[in-house]
Length: 407
Image 1 (cartoon, helix red, strand yellow):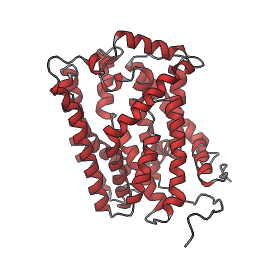
Image 2 (tube, one colour):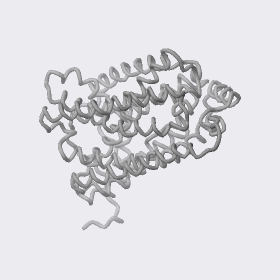
Image 3 (cartoon, rainbow, N blue to C red):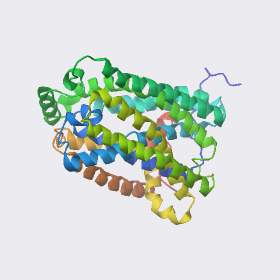
Image 4 (cartoon, helix red, strand yellow):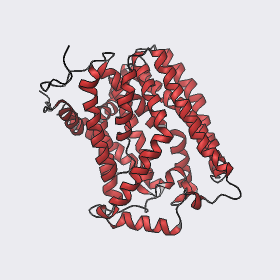
């Protein structure tokens, strides 16, 4: 047995079997999360959770919000989180000896990337959360599919109860609830100061961004930490069961897609309509958020089922390839989304568009970025083995420059 304290010679990264279906789903997920994240890039942070907080919320802008809420809100980050767990199972298998030697250095470097990403560029980072929770979830990768599903759903359910309890606690506040006093909506002065700060320049905004990053990471672990942990376990289970590697029968994927989307999308749509109808009354927010919390699990599973179904049909291979390429470069695409959005919405040396693009224009910008990233991913991978950030992450993890150009 090798002594863990004995220095090991740097090793090249092992060659892992690539599953096109997983790459495709990951590519769709990393693109999908931008439709929601752009709100936190382009507007006051409170507008993400409480839409009336900033910018126009009527007509087409309200429609765009409803579409994003129904089809995107929490759905694609759910897929992304599950795939992170699947990635752990894929890389390490059930061999417990691989954990400390390979996994933890990888997570520590991801943590480093995440801290820079969060505190320098964008407070909405998810990498720190993934790195920290990934260090724990890896310990359970040897469990059976059934146990992984059980504990994953258990963690999600516990998180859901806490999530609902926090929003339901608004009903304990006597009298009329003022969204400004509760911190859900910025005051006119705060809003004006925030817009001016973002437009003033990258350096001026750094302290504000860092403060929101610390708050966001803390609240994120409270609101979604257990859910993220549970999703990673479910991702491991779905990988082990063959679901994510497109090994289930076509009919199984079709039934899963119809049932999950047939139940989940109407619930999510109702939640969005109800929130608009009652003017985002904070006393009812637990109903809207709770419904979508549950629906997002079904919708995410339904989306994944559709991707697995199409991955089994050879006629769709060419159509899906751009998303497959984007998935193979998901780390690069995720970080480049931040670099693009930071340049566009933060002032000098950026363009300082913060507070100027309505939701309709934000959605149009997202589609442009999607097209750009799909094209860039295909072109890059026609020459290189990995995306640039994937290559850097691997090289740092294995303490050796990895070959990047294709032979």
